[in-house]
Image 1 (spheres, helix red, strand yellow):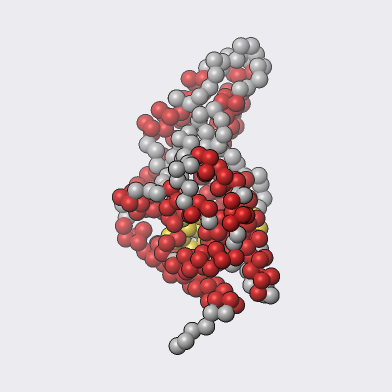
Image 2: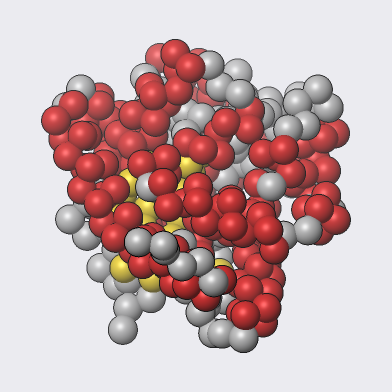
Length: 331
């Protein structure tokens, strides 16, 4: 029996190199081995109060990028979160066996409070409950997660176990992290530290055109250059070499490492090479994104079929939960 695997991404706009190399390429591979559910988390994005005029366009953008990157609606269930109302109903029920104290202790909530003290809404507090709902509504057994999401996956396991113990059943599986068989690639940002991300403003997006990519790479943070041969790399320079190792051929990487070790490195030349190799990978994807995004019929059929399949799975779970909890119809 195939594992049920679930993953989603917020609909706050464009996917970047970190998304592509960190997870998307693995998602493409695992479609043939598992029953996969991929969704666009538009409900999650409401915690940041996106403008209504951009809301739908952001969903379309992420959907087109999913499909252009290789996710196949004939192999996987691809849907928009809000098109499955069973998610919202189970989310309401799950809040009844989730506790304020444990939600306030989550790292993500504390970080959001620190960064955005003027927008501490209830959705931020119960964010882990909605994430758990997304997983449990399909009774998923595997979830691809990065280091920053491990706590949320553990909370999902806690919620599943709590429900099972509370009602004396073995209804929800306790999902585990999906292991791709290799260590996940972490793509650093262009700002000299941390990982690539949309909110950090340090990323190369799959939808970026060539001019934008070259401009971003040439502005990437470096240092004043090695003072002598074999000088240790600063973090910003190490980040550029990390990206080079991801997108470039081995002989190119060896060439620039030798230039660095000899003290002859010219960061302008390194950046030009890096931009060339990023463009080689992303521009064909961008072309597919543009084609798919303009194909309204294909996008509509994809999410309609995906929602139907997702609702079939979700309604079965919700019906089971309500029966266990004691809900009974009067007609």
